[in-house]
Image 1 (cartoon, rainbow, N blue to C red):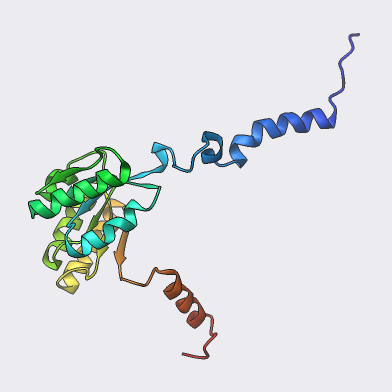
Image 2: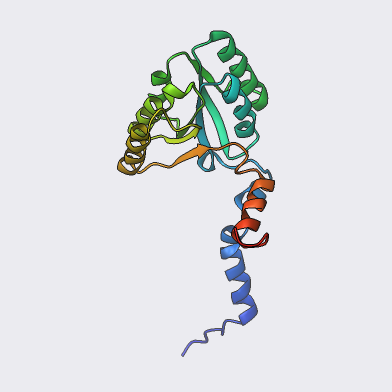
Length: 190
């Protein structure tokens, strides 16, 4: 009969910790940086980068999990300025510019878009984006009619995409806190 050494608990735990470490420690720590891996980033397209779209753009650029790769605006001067802004933020040529939103939506490498165009374009662009498999963040209002909103809601369900409507200030920390206080009855019965 041969001798089989008995495993000690301490040795077992050392092995278990070394195997479990990648599942417990965030990948950014192991990589030595705070930037997420390419698989952890949403590749974003921006449609309408003038007034409101230009104001929203820095919010997306500031998020490490977002990589803005494509911009669209019918005004060449505005578009060129925003492309320079994106490339300057990333420190390299990253963003492509388009005058036609359909060209941007045709890109397979765009995961999501934000739409900040004039209102009459919101729903047509969003419907095309959903049809092409993109998630959508859109500035308010939803559209020009209840029927447009219903069409959009049906398309989100049919294409199984994520849709969010921006309603300025509702997602800022102080407004979220205020809503939490109201919903939890902290200011009395409303």
